Length: 161
Image (cartoon, rainbow, N blue to C red; front, top):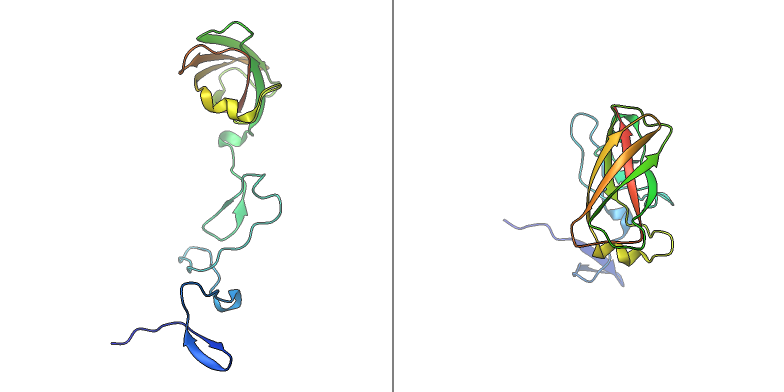
């Protein structure tokens, strides 16, 4: 049984595509998203300008969407300062009017540069975070994994029910 092979017309002659040839986009199928009955493989839709900065992802229905925070919350950023004397652990009060007692708070290290630091300095330190919600604030307990730390770091957090 013969298998189908893609061909092209070049100078009026038919020839087989090689690995270095470019297939015209109009000749390729477009992805059809799943609407309940399954989708179709193909080219994905191009993201709009700014979609990468907004951390959008391609959904199964072939649309670009933002990541929704659990409990309807949104991602917030804060800067913490361990001070100039290196320490293994420290606690911080993070003020946020949207936080209420009993909320769950998820915290991660931001890889954005803190004030006066370069972004690549984040690669040298990692932390464990624990948070306890209060009214209009939460207490953040931070423990270093990689030795004593000093200076400033940014964190990202989500507070939700």
